[in-house]
Image (tube, rainbow, N blue to C red; front, side):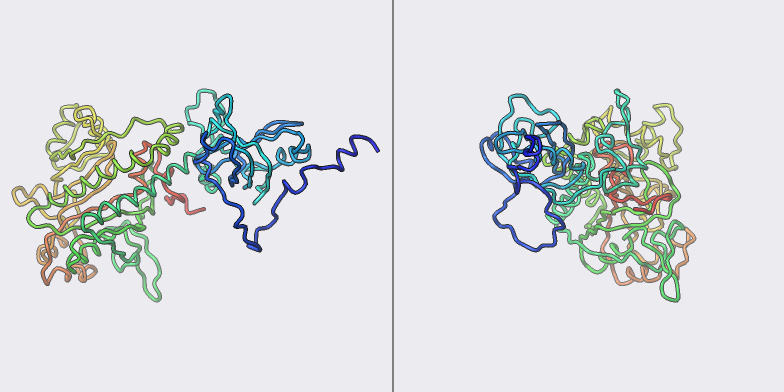
Length: 488
């Protein structure tokens, strides 16, 4: 028998590598305790650890293998060398595992003489003792993750995955460090929104998404069959937030899907998105609410910049952007001030016209240059460009007690003092050509006394996009819906 044949038959690493097969919860393994990759550092030098992650890639041939193990946005290098405890078969097995397979690795943490620049845990590596496949990926991937995280303007002219391809294969795309960072930060937005408002006396409510009439009295609604009749998907929880205030809840917020049947194929529009909505009764002036919302945003920005440093850096590597600037006290501009700034910059803007998208962006640049902030409030919008339930300004009926708030020159919340008098509300609805019968239950809510109140609605995906400086809101939607996409 030849020496080669003997080596083929003898495998000193039997039992230390292989596949678990289909995991069907047939046994409990309390003896195996996994360590998160992000926690592995030089302090672990000389310690043996178990870790579970994805095989991002592997390289080497013959007697060695270097494998990059990825866990969300963190990664570490695992190394194998043929020797007294590692067989050739073991090394070859790891070399042939398809990318993106989920694997369990057991080994010794060791400091590296040179930084492993391809991994986040650059000062250590894992000297492998055991290596098992938990779930094996198919050999051919529809996209390569290293291509999906490459900046669009990559100077090396390497392959870049187009957005549509990424969204068609969203499950793979979500594994990239960039996507992982985006959605972890987005989760932080919701978490902070809840905590900040709860600390200010707000309570969370849940509003219906199937409604009998268009929320805003407009045409941009999805109609759905409803038993023998028809109904609509809510454009906003607006009416129900107000009814909750009329029901003496005082301060409320809600987080949930909203639907807009707008055939807008822009970088910032979706047909379904997550709304962060709030409503608040006030004592004498709607600025009590305006100030509360603006301060909530300041607290939110501080929270994100303080708690998501690694995520922000991960996104910046693919989508470079200026750091998000904000002042410690909210900047509030009056609508006429904004019009004057635009006119001084040489653009046309009517005193009672709504801001166009280009003018909003220009105003954002002007404000950043003058006030060193990417976040500001624009107060006292013209009444003609606001919904029917907006309270007119008591001193100048051309204007209204309404406001928008902006991030990087794009609107992220539109709000106002609401009309809380049923007679005035009916009058305003008629002026807007709304069928009173269809909103009668809404109007009736204010017939029996209602506190003066104000609020607004925020788009979660848009806040995420603008805080991070992303080029497209679809990157901030887990499975985006727009006029051309309803899958996956």
